[in-house]
Image 1 (cartoon, rainbow, N blue to C red):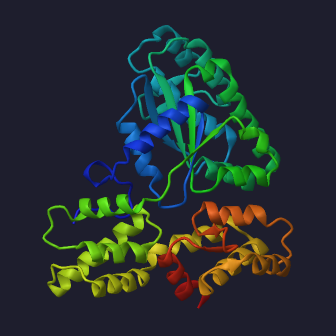
Image 2: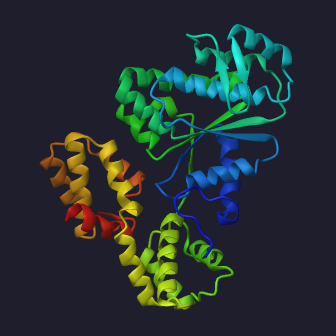
Image 3: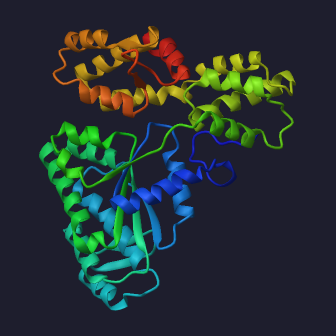
Length: 384
């Protein structure tokens, strides 16, 4: 079987959704700057790689990850180094860059590395200067900043809310600067919901200029086509009725979970020397997947990292109730809010939804787990 579990999918392992790329470019043209919103394991990184490898004419996609950064100037330093290396490519602005090298005492520059000899550089101001001086460019830069939300959370935790607010305002001013706006589009992604973080420090106005782009889970047809791609060239037979049973059992059709399950199915078929996938094999594959903590442990680890104290206790109990009772209704949620004395539960519930733990079922007025797999794992390993 042809699949990859864990790392971002590329090349023959990537299941392309061309309409998403088209929708992305249309939205970027309309909004200039975007925030990519999607739950964990939906394939954000794979999607960004597809954009990198399939640039639209007139655009140049650049990718950086800022997950470990916890200080504003370090963030702007990484952005500046990336832009400097990108714009210097080809020597089009030779005189300007020679002046920059002297002023900042740059000792080494390449597309992946820049070394500065001078300390105490205000990289925010350097970005503005760079974009002001480099007036002409054949391509618009699309700077995709992965885990920007994590960077913001790091700054909130390590530097304080006021520093984080100032950082957000600097980012907005950078996007609004005419010289920057004419050359660069910023695309922010991350596992943490940016909107919820910004609301937590009372700065919603700082991101009102950013458009929203969503990456949805797979449709049934897409999931079925992915399975066809996985088993292509393999002698194992996966017939229509068994596929429908598999997809109904999965319910929440994320490429990660589909490939996890197909990996378990492949192992069972080899062990049993069976080249036909049956419902019994599918059920056994689910059981085996639930016994592998590495598939799901990060959901619990993530919960511990984003919630502290009573917030964590509240979030855990809400998920426990949703898992055991196949959902938690609005009244029970309100009782849990009172139990843990949560002043404002809306941001906490929004984070649980954004991160993909559960979804609001409006007609039935309940929150239920997105993934039956995660729900079953949660009951066995967290609720106990």
